[in-house]
Length: 322
Image (tube, rainbow, N blue to C red):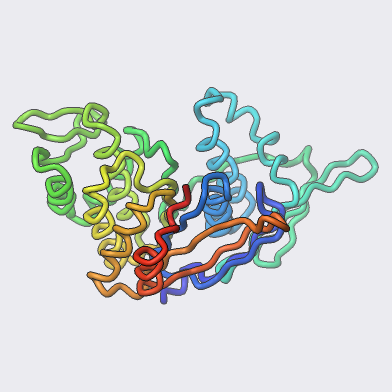
C-alpha cells in the first residue's frame, strides 16, 4: 500500500463526531449508511487531515468544506469576509491518522484570544489579532467533489492534468462508453464542451450525469499520488452506468496511485461496486457501513471485503443506507 494512503483515522469534536475511530482503509473506499449518519462529515474530516500540513492549508481546507456545504446560502464575498467566523466554528477539532495529526483550539485568557494549532505534534500558537487568515490552495493532488459536482470553471482548470498525461483520447473513450452519442470533449472559450452529432455543446446542456462523470475523471488525473473525496458519487448517474463508472474509478485510481473515498446511499451503487471489484479481482477496494448505536448515539463503521459484501447483498440486502 502506498505510503500516502490513509489507513486509520480518529476524529474528535468535529460536527457529529465526538470521538470516532476507524481503520482498514485501502485504495478505494466506498462508505454507505443512512442519511444524516455522518458520511459527508467523515469525508470532510479526512480531507482536512490530509490537506492540513500547516496553518494556511488548514484554514484553506476548513474554508473549502464550508463553501461546499453552504455555497447556495452565501455569496462568495460573504465567505471570503467571514473566514474567521467559519474557522472558529471548528474550535476543538482534532483529526489523527497515520498521515497527519492536526488539531485546533481557541484559548481566551484575560481578554486575549489565541489560536492553538498542532500539526504532526508540532505546536503553534498565534494571537488572533496577528493572524492573517491567508488561504493557500496549493495542494492540487488532493481534491473534493461535493454532491453538486464541480463547476464548469473548475473542470476547465483541471483538464490540464489530462492534457499533461496525453489522455484526451482516454477521456473521450470513457465518455463514449457512458453515452455513445458523445464523440469528443474539449475546452472551448474556457468552457468544457462535448461534441454530439458533430456539434459542440456546453457541458451544462448534457445533464448532471455527464458533468459528474467528467468531474470524477478529471479529478482522478489531478489527484495523482494523492487523494480524491467524492460525496454522493452516483449523483445524476443512471443505475445502468454505475458498473462502468466503478470500472473507471478502480482502474484509474490504481494507474494514478490515487486513494479514493466516496459516499453513497444507493443499494444499486453498492452492488455495482461489488460486481466490479470482484470482476477486476481488486483486493484494494473496500466497502464500509456507517451506523449509529441507538442506545449510545455513538457513530461506528465496519468494513466488508468483496466476498463479505456479496454475501450481505444477496442474503440480507440491507446495505443501502436508506
